[in-house]
Image (cartoon, rainbow over all chains, first blue to last red; front, side, top):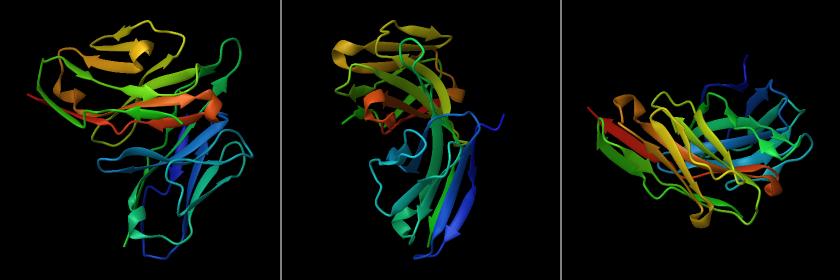
Amino acid sequence: NAGVTQTPKFQVLKTGQSMTLQCAQDMNHNSMYWYRQDPGMGLRLIYYSASEGTTDKGEVPNGYNVSRLNKREFSLRLESAAPSQTSVYFCASSELFFRGPPMNTEAFFGQGTRLTVV
Amino acid sequence: AQKVTQAQTEISVVEKEDVTLDCVYETRDTTYYLFWYKQPPSGELVFLIRRNSFDEQNEISGRYSWNFQKSTSSFNFTITASQVVDSAVYFCALNNNNAGNMLTFGGGTRLMVKP
């Protein structure tokens, strides 16, 4: 049972380089999320996708793009990395059920990607 | 807009003390979900509890208990007889159906339990 898988686990980039963080979930969830975690700042939402084919900005979207490739995969792209994007990135997924009263599952998280931009 | 506030950034207690972590949320919607997560030093996020807006019953799970009060928009978490293994960062989160299922976290409370 893999759950949410993120790659890579660690990455060092030079300023101006680009990269894509990959995320895949095997729980058939509709909703997927990308967060960044910085010391003392908690988890801040970058982008989310409520369902396949939709994406929306979160709290800190500047400098990032996302693609919901299919129901399983949600990637995060840094087009031109900056030192301010040094952070730990988490992907997550959850599901909202409408059988009876709406019920939301908890979010399941990947292990995180530690990104350093020098 | 939705917002979660965890006013306590750091709490330090001695083992066996009880400790309460505060969480206050803001949302305009009547249907929403509240969560607590634990992040131990290893870094992963561990789900602790989910509560929906229709269920104000308090919950107890071993040494953990949660107090949900809609009147004050609070969802507080109490650890009874704390242990060193409880040392972690704890996050409260809010999920709102009408905001495209957006999940918003508070800033987290770092709990340090000293032996």
